[in-house]
Length: 403
Image 1 (cartoon, rainbow, N blue to C red):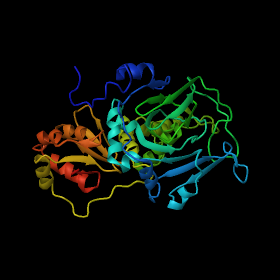
Image 2: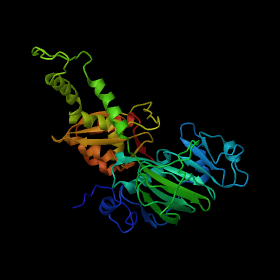
Image 3: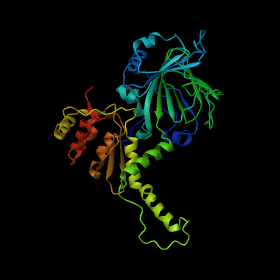
Image 4: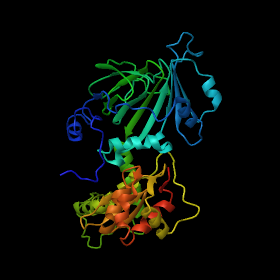
C-alpha cells in the first residue's frame, strides 16, 4: 500500500514508466528521453534574471565561449574560453551574438520556484540531489561534448536545444589539451533529438553528450551528488582521527618472548588490526559520520542564524494558525532511523539524536523544500517538537513561508 505522506510526481515525468521501472531499467544504466515530461512547463526565470544572479558575489557562475565556430575566432587562436563569475554588467555587453553559454549553479537555493521543481524528483532520496544548474545560451551556444560523473536530468525550460548523446558509459575519455574545460576531442553520438519546453533527457554517469542551442534557450540541469570513494574515505578517516583518544597507544602487556626478532608476528599484527577495525567496523560511527558529511553545506553556503531567536511556543502558535515552513537556501537536512526506534536528525553537518516520538517531525522537515503546517500541527503536542522546530528556525535552516 503506498505511503500517503510520500511525495508524488507528475504522471508524465518519466513518460509511461513508474519510478520503480525507471530505477530498475534506466537509472545509472541507459539514457531516457521523455517528451512533455512537464506539460506546459514555463521557465520560472527569464534570461535577464539568470544573468542578474550571475552578478551576485556568492553565486557560482561561468560563461563558456566557443570561438572556432565564429568567423573571427579568438585573438589567440584558442577554440574555447572559460570566464568565471561573479560578473559585472559590462561582461554581458562584451559577448558576441551567438555561440556562448551562461551557467549558474544552485539556482534551487536562490529562487524558491526553482527549488519547488525538485519535488518532482523526490522518488530519489534528497541527500542524492546536488543542485539545479540553469544555463542560458543564444543560437549555437554550447559547452562542448563532454562527460559528467553523475546522473543528470536535463529539463528544457525555454527555446530548443539539439542534444546528441551516446547510449553507454565511456570508460576512458580523451580530452582536448590546453583548455580549462574537459571537452572530448572525439565524439560519436548514437542518438540525436531536439528538446523543447517541458521535454526532458535523463543521462546516467559518464555518458557522453553535447547540447547546442538552436534558438535562445534555457536548460535546467538537475544534478545528483556522487562523492568519489577517495572523498568518502578521506573525510571518514579525518572524522575517525578526531574521535580517537590522543593518549591511547599501542600496548602488549601479555607479550611472550620473540622467537625471531626481525619478524612482525601474528599477535602484533592482530593487535594493530584490532585498533583499526575498532574504528572502521563501528557501523554506528560510520552512519553518524555520513549523515554529518552529506548534509554539510556545499560551495561555502552557510546558514545565517536569526538575530532575534523565537521561543518554541511562538513557533508552535504560528504553525497552528496555518503558517507553513520552508527550507532556507543554505539548509541541508536528513535523518537516519535506528533499530531501537530512535533517530538522528542531521542539519548542515550537525547531528541531533531524537526519540521515536519526534521521528514524524524529522520526517516532515527533511527531504523537501516546502513543509505544510498541516503536516506539523498534529505533532506539536509531543514533548520537544516545538523546541526542535524552533532550533531549526533559529539556526537559519527553516523559516516561515509567508509568500
